[in-house]
Image (cartoon, rainbow, N blue to C red; front, side, top):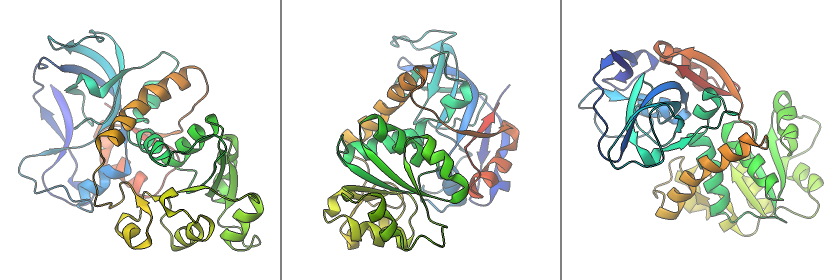
Length: 317
């Protein structure tokens, strides 16, 4: 019998339950997948707790949008996939499960150089990073400041930007500074008591100025530093302080932004996954996988993510 993680009321991690499910046959444009790894995103626990609005729960609600697995069946109209193919799942629903059925458009082939856990770590963070960079029109010659560079989104932002010829400065803790440097960014330690203000440190590290900012930290210092350094507020975006963006005159995606993604932004997010997989297969892009837990331990996985554990937490059905 197939199983999935569900919940019937908003609350803490304890509301997550391993439940037996029925798996339908795929419709014409769908693919059935045996899940081998499911990525755990911060959005998952925000939806579970009710911190992110998602409407009333009327039936057991499934969890998870990203994963990897093996195709077990394809719909009549599906081309490009067949039973036995290794795939990455992104932007789907209910991926914390042993088996899922998803539209073929939410799959990408997984190259052998990319593990299932690495594939499961892509979806939300890689799509967010790539789309944000494209929306800001970041390109060679820019100097980009990233507030919060050592998380999954920040690491992806750094890598894409460096590959495109962008100079990247990223704030991080002393403990995680080496990771930022290894990815090609200049690490600015926010917990350095001797370094002066963040604005002063950025100016010292980038005497030619900063041309764009991506805020993944959401602190008052991050926002004020961004405003101090970049005159064109259209090139400042926050992924955390969406509710404040309009009043500050800056842009926002996710993080409470009242505006849903438009068609182009959604297309960029989907484009990001095959782009990242191609780069990973060539050894030019990496994701940091953290703890791996059995599917039944989804509650423990959420606690780890809420605590800010290093690397992407992955569930293994």
